[in-house]
Image (cartoon, rainbow, N blue to C red):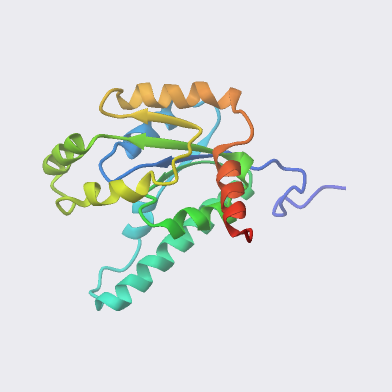
Length: 199
């Protein structure tokens, strides 16, 4: 009996999520582009900027805009989780500049399927890149620095002031076959669970 090609295969494996986290202008998109070029398996690059770009451009009052932005991030997380659940490998281009975003991802993603990558860049270099780009509010990246890496746990890290996008992508690719457990997401989930336990 032939299976329905429109139905999901219950035996299908989940996709891997390469989760790039760093401030604006830290180099995440350039690394993602290189990853798609050098990885052996098919991957989708899902940058959050693409989701913001799909939203209508009409002006909104600040209180309404805050709610819309929050819902955009929540929808983005669920879109990524859905792609991975469907067996697709995904490169996520993210800015964890608010604590709730990380907690939402920890709740949604299968933690052993996530490779959590810290994309670091020093303050001076971020400021220089922002000036060159000219398409970001001045000081945005520096304002994000305090929170973006506050959780302190990654599977792999790169410094884009010392390594170019290809070198960073190669580092991540070489890490993939040797992923230890617990993963960073597993450790972070455990830490949050411990924090909720009454003392």
